[in-house]
Length: 108
Image (cartoon, rainbow, N blue to C red; front, side, top):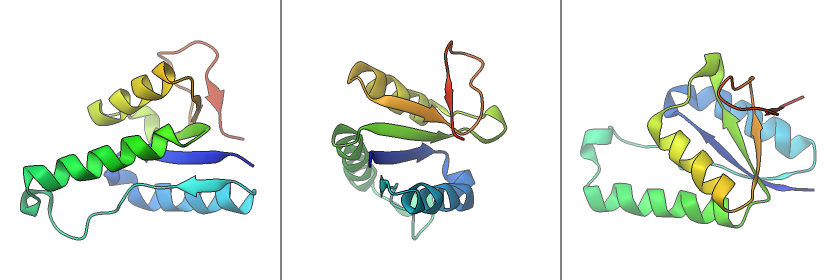
């Protein structure tokens, strides 16, 4: 069993939920993003920072991150999460092939 944090754009919220469940049913402990309950504009800067720090902490305690890069899309925030995970020697698993990287581990 691995501890895996889901990373991806919130525009893929349903896909992230789907793969979180799939990974959990394979016996992994899955940590997910906090899904917003209001429009982004309604969050204070402090609230956004708190949510971001929490996500980094989830990566810290994970063995791996699972990147939901549907249609090859990886936004700026997710790129930073990938860089952070690499810097901290976390396994990185992509939903789809990531053309920007050699030896990309793809979800099976």
